[in-house]
Image 1 (cartoon, rainbow, N blue to C red):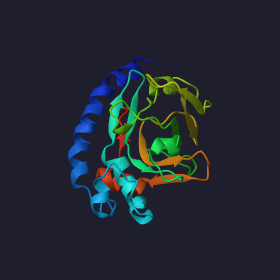
Image 2: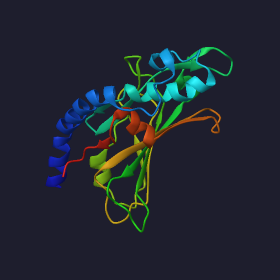
Image 3: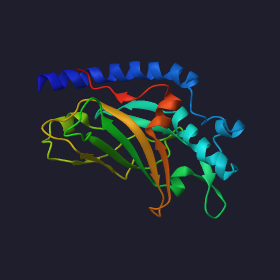
Length: 217
C-alpha cells in the first residue's frame, strides 16, 4: 500500500515531464501525411473540407493539441476539438455528431499467452471550458490497482460533467499492468455504425513517439 501511495504521489511530476517532452516533439514529428492537406489541416473549422481532406485533417486536429491533465483521481487525456459538417449540412462541433469517444490503450511489455492486456476508456464527448479541446476524464489508477483483477469494468466521472464514463479491461490476469500505451481513438455517432477512428500509428506519427501514461516504478 505504501508503494502505491508513493507511486501516485509522483504521478503529477511525471505528467509534467511528459507534457514538456511532448510539446517540442509534436512540432517536428513526421505525421504520415496527416498535415499535408494544405491550410485545411491547420484549421479548427473543417466544415468546408472535402471528404478526402477531412479523413486526414480531423486526425491532425485531434492529435496536435493533445494535453495530459492531472486530476486528484489520476491522469486524463484531453483531445483537440474541431468543427465539422452535420448530415443536414450545418456547422457543428464534433461532439454534436459523435457523442461518445473511446480512448484505447495497450499494456506495455506485457502479454498473457500471446494476448496483450487492453484498456478502453469510454467517455462522453464534451467540449471543454477552453472551447479548444474535448474534456478529459481521469483514469483512477489508485482505485483500479487496489481492486481485484476480476473487476474488468469501472465507472468514472470528471469534475463539472454530469454524464459519467466507463473503463473496460480485457486480457488482464494475476496483476494489473502498471504502464499503458495510448493506441488509438474512436468516435461513435448516434448511429453506432457512424464512426471516426485514429490508429496507434497515427498517434505516434503526430506526437513523435508513443504516449505511455506514467505510473512510476
